[in-house]
Length: 337
Image (tube, rainbow, N blue to C red; front, side, top):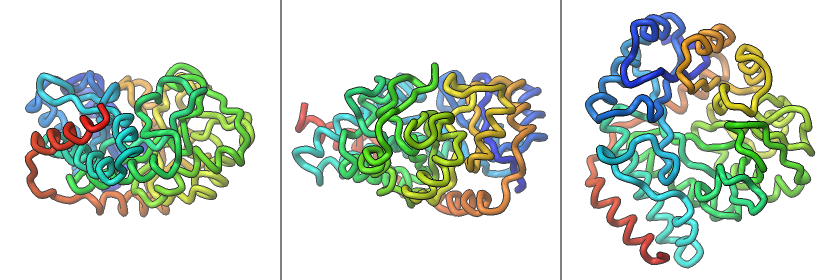
């Protein structure tokens, strides 16, 4: 199926006729859901099916279901999951238990998602926690050092893959040092490149083989003082595809975030020109989505090959007792409570 190189949201819990017609014509590669799209399990399943019917194939459907502050599926229909921080704390005393706990946690999340037809989770977050960083990352980080963070992030990715859900590595090449929330304004990191390469970027280097990734709307002043990673050819070539060596399908973070400058068409063109394979647009505004679609080419070439490699990893998982998995995770975490 021929798709355009963007991922779209929708405005509410049900597709409108205008959205259905737009998606059929614009042919986005995938879709992303948010809390505004979620009411009940049956409603989400129906929405996922309608999104795919609009484009005529089993298009990927994404969601942010990390745990903690960032999870779109919540009680009473879905359980609360812990953030990354307690897994990092457990790793300090018992690395083996921590890796198993984070894998089981992601496997349980995957069971929830797979039951709804959602097959991509924007997890793991491999950003390092930094004392000078904005709290937008905070307890979403597994820790402060690249090796433990990468090990835990890989275990989380493996748990998702075992459950038939593709992981999205974020926020490449690292958001933890950012002094501002990129949803609101553009963060500028002034640390020397050598320091970033040895720490923040190193975590992502250890995860460069994961199938999907998401960029950071962050300026790294010692590399490109003018443009954030999402729209910087230099950061893309020298760092993300260069020193980190990321080989997967790379999507921008949300184009509608406050960190990016220019109108929506400029943002989209700049991200694609820099080297993003896909544009991500999340707020569900149809007028903006039409602009993003207008600047998005058909997915082809190397980007299409990366997309096909990622989608080939989708599988039908074995059945699990998700409640039992969650209890096992809770027992592990109680070790450091």
